[in-house]
Length: 163
Length: 432
Image 1 (tube, rainbow over the protein chains, first blue to last red):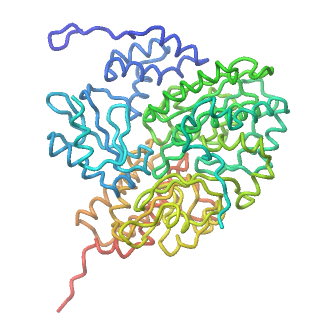
Image 2 (tube, rainbow over the protein chains, first blue to last red; image 1 turned 45 degrees about the vertical axis):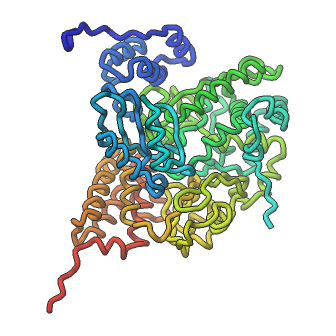
Image 3 (tube, rainbow over the protein chains, first blue to last red; image 1 turned 60 degrees about the horizontal axis):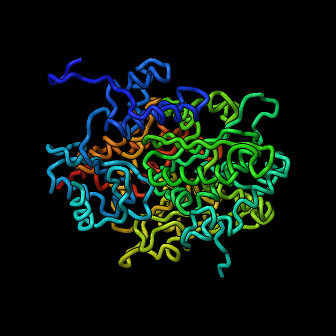
């Protein structure tokens, strides 16, 4: 398979031991689907068709079944994302405590709207629903980490620390 | 005077409270030791006697749920710890996982023992990565100390615990949606019956309990059902973690007895509303509960029965406070948008109806209101969630209660703040 003149590699897991360990935790193979998707995404950055085919083979089902699962969950990406994913919670408690200003700040400073990635791939901006941190609103998740009780100023400084 | 001493969060301000040595020092795992010498049926009976009701949102009696597990089934039994906390306004389970993870784990082993389960899952929401890493450590530590694995504490009882991460879907907090998700599928809730206790994970008997519910168990075992029942209203007793957020000076999680007054929570525990502003409305039990106006809110007790009488619900005890400056149409749109995003798409009234609500409310706030919009909003909410008749229960138009969870709050916004919605409708021309 060729894309952009580059030979596309078929996806394989770089840590087969971890794959084995995941399977050992479940009495049926299909239950390993989500953990394998998480593992694949942490390796590749997103879920490609090749990932889906590989996991379908591993858990013994049609690739459409795995695709069906992938399409359901907001944390699984079917396209490459920026190096850092900024997820601003927009549900009520965060909204009442200034979440919109945080989104506007990223849009103004880095010229990306929600759903967009910077041309240099530094940031992807997303508006997300309740992150379960309403007591320290507004909350922003950057990659895997929560940043709570942010003012625009604190947020600005924080973003500077991501290359 | 308030003489209540926190039970579940007693030690959360202390350093290392999440560690095994700390937990053991304050009596951790003594309840497990006691339970392993009891008959599983007696453990279930004790929990039944305590009147503990689920802390996830539905408030179903925990011991009764366990009692539905068939005695004569040869199939494996499963316990799933529902750590998929995602109800807007709710952030207590995350606190318990961070600060008292062994208390939760001890509760899991107790519940698993009572129902005869040997493989248990913690289904944790995908975004809680830090908590997931911490729980991995906690579980490993428990295995190393003979608190999990084979022959726990020298008994004949064995239990494995697997941590399973969700991947971003509110509906997976609904127990059958969760089970589908665990089976590697999209989280589409199942038609009930059969209930999970009969046919759950891999068609085997399964109990799904919330983090806070499980965390209560060591205390019930140690101090007895009578003690638990003596805290708050008898029909729904015990300590409860109330989450307060929105327009308050001091948001956070506050442990209080069931039945505490909402006024006390907002104005005492959470420090009242900033800048001397007036209270306007409150979600008492997460965004799926009907909102209360300020007048309704100031004399309500946070108790299952009383909130049902007020045509709302205690739900997940996630209190969201709105002050006088909050635009009710915008707030309603915010909540409708949440549900439209999170609708799993399985049932037509919910999938289509939530999208309609967002479209209509967006049109309203953008100045495009039409004369019959309010009637139309009622019609759509009725079509998603059914006519709300609490005496008969109103479930039925959708497979899971998500339909009601969007219909109730949206309808309550329009009913209770109709005037504000009317302002967005075209004004009748005055004929000179």
